[in-house]
Length: 387
Image 1: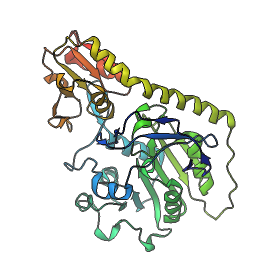
Image 2 (image 1 turned 180 degrees about the horizontal axis):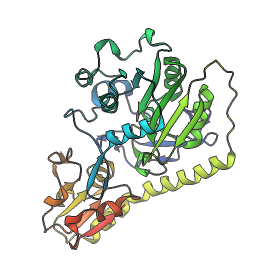
Image 3 (image 1 turned 180 degrees about the vertical axis):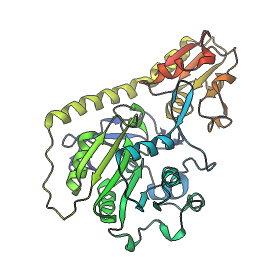
Image 4 (image 1 turned 90 degrees about the vertical axis):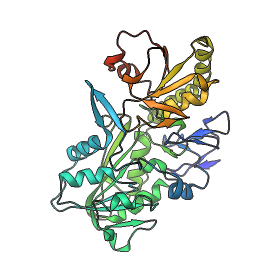
């Protein structure tokens, strides 16, 4: 039995448990631990048992996009034009909020804080502040912020009700106690100021269901419950502005207000549960589909996996004979030239003609359009496996 991270009521049994003692993290690394996913029938929240030694993991092991200053994730490709995640995040933030001149801004759980750095380049009047539970990102912070404006492990007392805006880009899903994090953030905000947050939307990106280090898999219902219960107001949750994610804006009240327990519509939670069960069933059978396809096409001497992110990593862990995979393929130039499972990551244009079988390791909702956008593959008789 566990307690829900959002409403704190008890959850008796997991909805999903992985088959073996191996799981995949958000950094596409194999980790020796089962993935257990629980569903809360009160607030519609999904959560995963936290990774072992979680504080040490984020302090020493979790290293996201630190190979170079410029390294970024590919958000999408439109008519052969690559759009990267940081650029998109800055654009959406500026569309959602009107930031006052000379704003004091904190990026909470920020890693190297590439989004805030890009924002400050557009708005040099903003004073950036940074907080994380690791010191490994300080070399990146030094390029755009002053040392007195960042902190690691502990928040500065002088930051109480100090900020015009606190942001959190893909960090709330990682924390064991999201309530405590949001309470701290509310204390950091000036009265009437805003919290801006992006978290994964598991209902449009099903891979999030089995990402081991994503402790929280929010629904719109559980997000609304959590933010209201803590005392935020003027809450908006946008499921369309950033694909596969929720974009949240919430305001700290100008004056303290007495909150009551948020109301939850039972029918909404039941609908969320139905979707959660569908995802649990999907991940229970998909590995068998990978191996069945592999066996059916075992006469193909060599194959490739398109996508070197989570989905591609998952496919690789399912294959019985990974030696027959020659490449991983990725359109992200920051991934090309690296390796995964000892296989080189190449651009689509580098794929040799001898490769006919391609395992498509992409979000099933966007996989077809992504493959169709690769002009240099048109006319080739590839045999595709889709998740």
